[in-house]
Image (cartoon, rainbow, N blue to C red; front, side):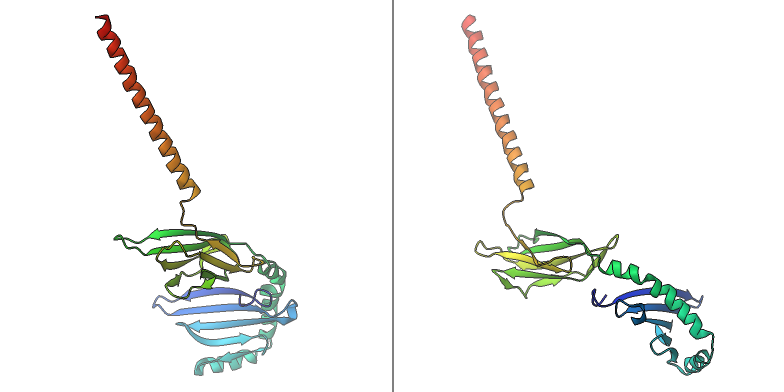
Length: 247
């Protein structure tokens, strides 16, 4: 969707393949130019081996051929008095009757879940890679930007494609190569239709809470084990001294 508030698109594709590998494809497309059904444009395109051969356009109200053969075929179909009726029925079923559904989907938004993590480089390199990941958002239009001390970072930045995540949702990732310093404040900024203002996720180089908890539990276990070992040694020494005194 180019503009979620102004236009919507529904594309239905039927593919037919011959044994020799020649491919025929038909695409029916509804373009919603406004909230009224009269503003919907319906097109039908015929392709052969990925080449556009013929196209019907409801705004023009006729067929257009793009090869010598399809130009003649378009003339024949444009002279068929039943073909305009067929196209009006198709337009109503595929476009007008689904306009409310398309508009409700068009207004549906899901706020992205954003996570920020660091990935260490192999071979002991000092440079690291920060990964900013956005999950479970809809629609797919999203903008991600890296900020360093309030300024946009334009170098050493890369992006993945926006990929379908299943169940209408999408995910995408952005990467920043950097050398960690204590004086810098690095953040990942995310802009999305579901957000009233940009979302900032600031990179904290300290250990995550879960990792700090695991370390604290490990240290407590080590201290307890050390205390038990010392107590055992003291107890053993006392028993040994008592045994020697009695004899």
